[in-house]
Amino acid sequence: MLAWVALSCNCTQAGAEKKAALADAVTSYLPRTLEALENGLIDEGMASKVFEATACASREVAAEVDSRLTFENKNPGSLRRMANSLLMRVDPEGYEARRRAKTAARMVEIRHGDHGSSTLFAELPSDRAQAIYALCDRYALDKKRQGDVRTTDQLRADGLVELCLGGECGGKPTAQLFVYIDLPTLMGLRNNPAELAGCGEISPEMAREIAFDPNSVWNRIVSEPMTGLPVDMGRKSYRPSAGMRRYVQVLHRTCYLPGCFRPAQYSDLDHIQPWSEGGGTDKVNFRPFCRMHHGLCDEPGWEFHTDDDGTITVTTPDGRTYTEKPTGFC
Image (cartoon, rainbow, N blue to C red):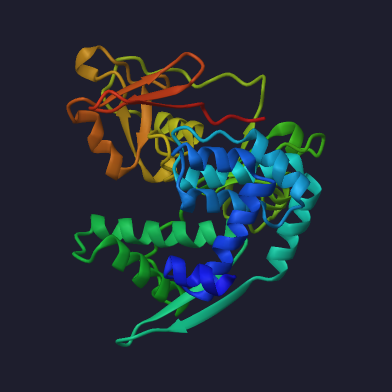
């Protein structure tokens, strides 16, 4: 049977096994994923994201996750994040057991390729992997500011080599990294999921491990229900102060464009309502955009709107709208 699938789909035996497993899943315990696939809301690759995220759980748990999924205006990354977040909520004990097992199975692997090039893989806990990537990214940005002509990808790769082989980053500070957790969960009174900026939601146990690790490089961002917000700058200045910049980056966590998960601390800040049209330099009117999407603010036909509850609506030049609820503490 698998050999027939491989021939029909012009794929390898391993590829045929994946297709067969996906077909079994969507026709037995992932009915809403199948419906979205049939209606053209997602493609086979996106359906695979749901299957891969839930394959480690029981069919009953996977079916419950499937029943809560929404597929409109999702890209593969946002759909994977949603499936993982729901899995953590539906089966918190199973999720934590699998996280610890994955941590125990951490590894580094090398695959030698052609033309003198090899690929280095590292299977790591998410906080370690995100920290390493962010440090390489900071290295690349610093070099770019100094006029280095290498591409950003080249600089990240060269930075990783330099750091691993004992080089120095020119005395630059380590990257700013953030873990978000609400105060009751930090104290162990509740068990709400937390979030690693740029990575997505993590279990409360993992968040507490990071938050209380004396050697952690992460900035612990705690949600305190009774704390007030920073004072607005109003229209006294076009550019935000360092404090306002840090507040906006911490508040919004990632790039403002729905579906982009570039951490906000590596993004630009821009006025949603232009300064020239009366927009203020304040926490309400500033949003982080990654460098790629920042230019959309000035492109004809692109509109950005934020409701009072923080819901983001982006209108594209062809008139389509994309809406995303704000990231918040549970």
